[in-house]
Amino acid sequence: MRIRKAVLPVAGLGTRVLPASKVIPKEMLPLVDKPTLQYIVEEAVEAGIEEIIFVTSRSKRSIEDHFDVFPELEQALERKGKLKELKALRHVQTMAIYTSVRQPVALGLGHAVLCAKALVGNEPFVVMLGDELVAPETPCLQRMMEIHEKYNGSVLSLFTSPPELISSYGIASVQDLESGVVQVSQLVEKPPLEEAPSDLAVAGRYILTPDIFELLEKTPQGRGGEIQVTDAIQMQAEAGHCYGLRFSGVRYDTGNPLGLLTTSIAYGLRDPAIAPGLREYMRQVLQ
Image 1: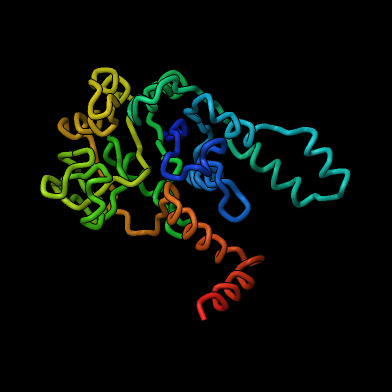
Image 2 (image 1 turned 180 degrees about the vertical axis):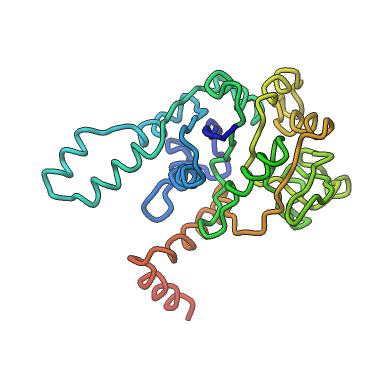
């Protein structure tokens, strides 16, 4: 079955980037001239996703507003002859179908995914975390979809983690199947370094089969009272239905101040309109 839907869990409080995220969702913090979340939506659309499902909370209304129509602004841009800006605005509003559901209580990523059950239905879907970006020149979703189509299971994007960050990620134990493709046999959420089964960490991209919902409903709350999607995927791995892509491309973590700043610089250097000025500024301050 072709994958049409992507779930974007964006209900978190964004505490790592406070106070900037007190009233502005961390996913809406800008990178150059777009909110971070827009890059993620564009990545999904580029891979063939047609429907974006936002899992939001009461403080994230601006996310839905950003992707909604804004007739007054469109009329103002049209009156002023700002057709380039108008075209960009309408592209955001029409590049996908947008739906949303609220996560009433912050009970973890697994619970956020479970909140989308009614909107996803009985079909495989993508999950994309709102603070991890993949460089457009090294995409991974399309390849993950190909792996899902071949092996008919869930697929994780995996990258080699430095030792000091292993306790921050879900870590996978794997067996190689073909070039860049593995079968996941074990998945552990944020293990201490000495207990980690490998150094392969789960990046913020997942393809999940719909049986994940039944597994999540049976998953007890773990550390911090949260329902971990890792625990449910581990059950799929035990049944032999979980695979992984060894991702060697460029990824960015915008969930902390340094990551947000360096990602913005990287994307600014890709923008031909501002890259020359940015490079000149960097040369001046680094002298």
